[in-house]
Image (tube, rainbow over all chains, first blue to last red):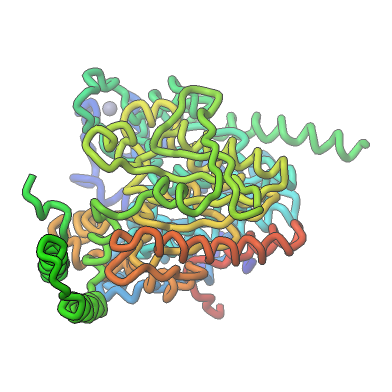
Length: 290
Length: 323
Ligand SMILES: [Zn+2]
């Protein structure tokens, strides 16, 4: 691990990007809610953690904003920032695409991992950013996830993974697919070591990321309304299914069918995480006593 | 259906020679005339033609071969490779999934657990087997059988042949993503040898859900990919018709898998593909299975698991910049 202070140069860049994306909202001052069409004052929207105060629609949060919303007073140190993307298929359209996403977001890759403080407790965090290449998992994302988990095992810290991904980055081909196996194997190690592992599903939680480390938490909580499933299609293709549920592949569908523990609105996310972490801590204290 | 529905375009010249040879044999049988030499000459020509054609197949041609309607499917190999196979059904939770088969088998004197996806040959069976797309109950059945193998210290053999996992409403309701994820996690620490063979289509998460093993083999003309080539083309170029280019870029072939360092061995297929000589294809595969299983049975379990973890831990590309 190579810790980089969150308030360092990279962090500044990330926070700047977060601000820019706010500035980039339509008309600068106002935003129209995509769900209820309410006109929202951007400053209010930001104060409300980017949740529509009329209908509760949860806008997608970038990784930097997410981390700031979860850790105590910006207490976060990034790790493995030095891992860099490789065009593993030697596909001539890969580098231009990568450059485009970097320019668009100011990020180098789709995930930020590191150690943050939550309610005074050190926690290993992995936060995908859907704005960067749809949060797709390739070699760097997979490696950062696994290193974060290994760091948590070595240092006996809980792990919280925020999912925001369209799945595997297909332009990384079979090595990309193998990130599913690689991260799932790391989850096995995590559980063997008795490390608490919390998964937070955010919009979108799909495909190969959901079907690997995104489904292997001790606790799985989800923001409301988000899209989640092995694919993104909300219209079932099979002819014999007449009744596709209205909430098909939404968080509410996942809850109803037993795949997640709770749906938690954004403002309650940190308090909920603190409760779950406290439950896990007690067990550790008992072990210490024994 | 036209008679050539199950002949690929690049196979047509081969099929024509096959037909000529068959015709001469038929005439010979009727007339009693000896034309052995003619037949041998034609067969030599045909084999040379096959060699030529197969030396120049594109990744897309290989994709078509992997999906060939005459290609041997899982149970075709099972019947030939194992002396005995007793199928076991059900996930004990919801249902039995005909797209994922499994059971106890004997490989010569070795007791093994077998699991694999099963495609259907005719229209009726295709529906029954859901085109080889397993549902959560299929992945859970596979895991149940693998855990039995672990309990009784028997090696596991997995045959992969699926376009993708099932993603319909029922599969999502019953947690297809979680089922695939759990399988990989459990297979990473399964305390018994696991040999995986991609025999046809290694389709994405549907494949990897039973493909985390100590050895990963591919049949020569199988494919293994993160997404079908058509899907890749649709995402990257917004043009599903460019599947040919997608197959090339993704290196979906067994050679590609070797080149990317993700496949341990490519098992040779008979000249012209497994469907031209099913028995030989099965013999080759059996020899490879015996070799790998016997090697793995010699390895102490802690070392086996450590090696397996490191194998998958090391997959994927990144570089480390100096800061
Ligand atoms: Zn709204």
